[in-house]
Image (cartoon, rainbow, N blue to C red; front, side, top):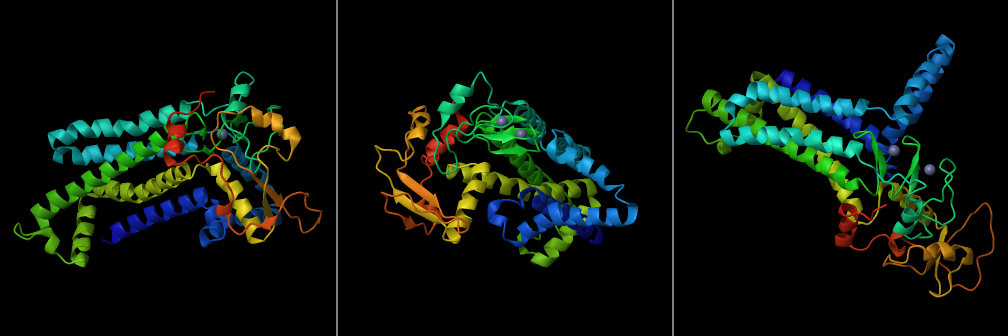
Length: 390
Ligand SMILES: [Zn+2]
Ligand SMILES: [Zn+2]
């Protein structure tokens, strides 16, 4: 039992810190202990290391670490993909080695099929075009979404690509390209997730979930039925009659006895929690008609609303406030949702007069602000799975 607890704690610890390192910067978690630990890992802890390095080795190791860190953080590299594939392949190997003999003929057909899903979907997601904005498709990219004048304004030029940024796009410093409807750069697929490939990314997440769920189901079934019924339990005692503590104790003994199957069971259940949480987060974003990139922008608005810095007014639909932006808005006429809201961000350090002719009031909640990209959940999902072509 001691060994199981140690293996379990190690896997749990690794999953926990990996999730904090990868997702702790999410705006919702920014001012929670998870956000603080994330900042400690990425900002405070490295500063301490550099300080120690300067103090004791004369700054010899610092540039070396920062060179490696810079490569890991800012360049395209398949290390995290390799880590994922090692876990999947290692898990499959351990399962087949000790578990195959217990499988019924139906599962012997399904295991190879489900076992290949993560490889196929990862390959597709990693090699798909996320929606690179190029000279050739620039006009089409501009026409895909209207500027909302909240998070995306017309006339902004990308300093690297030297092209006008389409609404919802973002320049990815790792892929070195502007990406249409940019969601995030995903280290698991070593590719950006954007307008054209978010469906492939979701398939990859879905396949990982199916793979892990099936793995938990099969390993648990083997551990429970084969071992518990044959070796440890009197055959006439129903498992459900056991007290919870004894049940967990027996499960612990079995996991140690069948160490490969037990390890796969623990690994699949703990990483499964992470994988499901990530999938649910992305489904929520689609339901809400937003992207990871836009969530960060909305979160900045939320901070300013809390400080009481945002004012709102309704404009007359036929006379846009900023005439020079009107032409660019004309480009995307097919989009069904418009807004007549105008916003003014007060700057306490630089007090200026409010634009005249509007009735300004303070915004109390983010809910008062229109999201023109949210067309309702069914159209939002359609836009993800059947994206506008570039
Ligand atoms: Zn760019
Ligand atoms: Zn990227």
